Length: 198
Image (tube, rainbow, N blue to C red):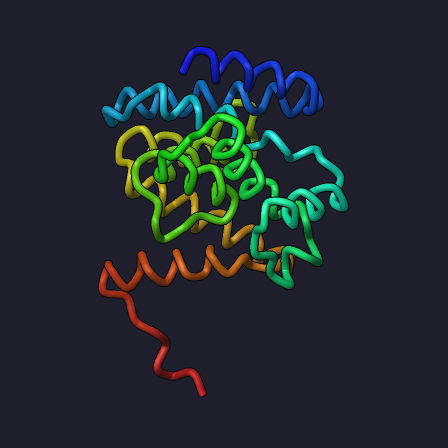
């Protein structure tokens, strides 16, 4: 694992901007803090956190090319906005370059932006850390951090909710996996639709 981490760090230093590297390191730190609280394997968390944005600074055309080379299924939304592919490309790279077969880590990396109904602890922690790491500064971030350090499930739900509010408030597209995750969580909580909708 140490050799993989060392090589990943070398790759990141070559392909990412300095600002992005600061973010990634902060996500690693935040993930480990949550991992210590919730007793999650820190090595697996570090692998996921370190690699999540590995291809975030790759130009859109190249992301599409890499996705096709890897045989990834590309949605219409991803064709229009190739940046959405960076997590899936990173997960596939981990598989092929390092032989990573840890499904929990791979799903966490692939869907760290959108969230995923198949997330377990590592996915939830990475999703939270990507939004709340300590270089992030937005209204309500401190309150969200307190929730995340107190209750993983509630922290995950509130970060998801915040992402959706942010997107809807700015007329941004919602990623299908995000909507599916939201509905899945609400269904598990006994949620219902507005029956007054005509």
